[in-house]
Length: 130
Image (cartoon, rainbow, N blue to C red; front, side):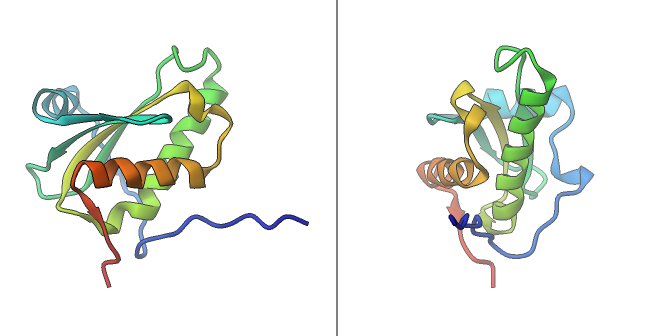
């Protein structure tokens, strides 16, 4: 019997409504002023946070898949990866995550591993807050 490894969690975290980028102006701000880093599974745009909070915006377009169930699964994987890492991200940043098609059949551990690597490349540390 194969035992699944649970993804590592940094601190205790939940995600509330205030933790998401929702307005078009917020997305435009990140796109205009941020840095873009591409990985095999996701692309991130990252910028220093003007409101001193760690927030995320997720983009999964119909180009990813025509089926909503597939797009929603990609959003869930990205959201869970962010939730597990959010309290350890320093300094506060705004992040836009764009899903790539290779994400389709993977698990949260794979997405989280790439997320950590891209954040390290962006010079954003993921540390244990305790």
